[in-house]
Length: 162
Image 1 (cartoon, one colour):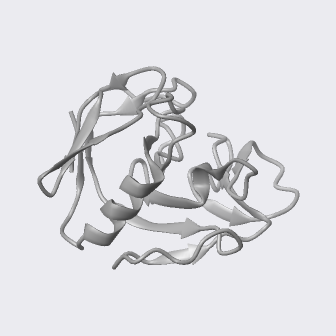
Image 2 (tube, one colour; image 1 turned 90 degrees about the vertical axis):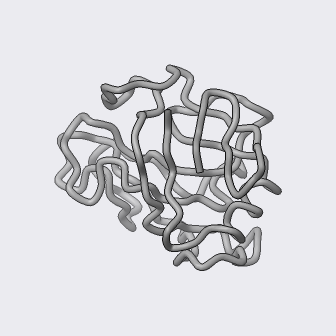
């Protein structure tokens, strides 16, 4: 999948996309709201089993639990990793949110698994809030397009952000 500012090209299709509010960057930093340029792999994902059935995909997807969070604090030893904790003492993002953004969320290998503090966390692929509404750095798609991508993804597929 090749990602540009306004669309993603994948398997012969052009799909509208939302990227980070800060545009694209070659020098990603935590909190800059930018989407990092580079080549990424999808290493897994999560889905809201209480809202949707597991997507048809060869990727490994786990249900999101009520305590699941993703650390976005560069001082946290678990920085840029998922945890299950009601009272995580560091800054984090709840994966089980009211908004439908993470009904299906894919995890990229951006700054993962060996996270460098401050180089950006949680570069996910997920549903958009509304058409082309900017993200905090993630890639976001219309729900039907995200499901189509999932059904056509292969172990050799990758994301190229230009």
